[in-house]
Length: 287
Image (cartoon, rainbow, N blue to C red; front, side):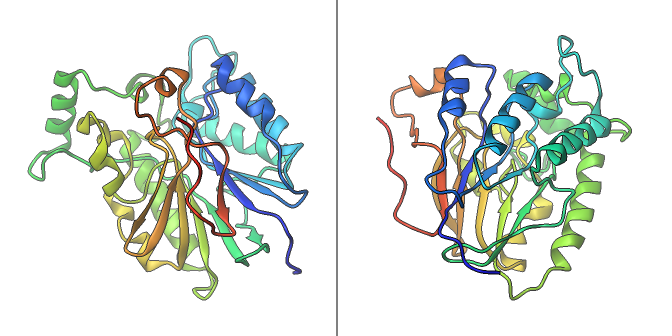
């Protein structure tokens, strides 16, 4: 496969129900005909918003790769699409496939551009409440503490795990399947992993409400960036856009976030989308 001249770009947490965010998505353009765009989840909640964003982006970028966030998996009462759990996820996968968008259910594509080739692996892993505020807390105690503090993710009401008994059971199934797929890849080929949640706990250390970490991933993936040949790990969810390095591996939080967050003094909003490859200097930040 010949090398292209494009870039591997990434963005997440588009939340296009907000008009300001919708304008950002409507204004996104590739710099080159060869640019790929990685979308690390939370396009929106309503099925028509998700469809609009994916149609818009897939028409502009050479390839779009999508990993679901928690918001796409919600089943709001006002959404005409009332599918729940696995059925909703499968519906979104089929929508993506109809637009040529790569999903976690498809063969992992190889990006051939500068600093490549690399395999791009979109992941769907969910969370299992193992990121707790204390090592001795049970899942039930940690959740009770979060409820007492008033820190409760809307997933508890709108993200249904059907037909699994629980979200943690769905997570366990997803981790097992995904781990097997990654282990079967050529270990000599570098990887860019795309997941809505960070694979490690360290990014949650800066959360203003540490209890929210319960809904931010699983300890089962804590060593994946070391076990596999990972060049970069792309994630969102936290609405804390930044570049960090753990164990020599680059982690990129690429969220857009909510308009109300941009108005917060000190919010580190970066110009979307983020360039992942070819590697360059840290991204410019907006005041």
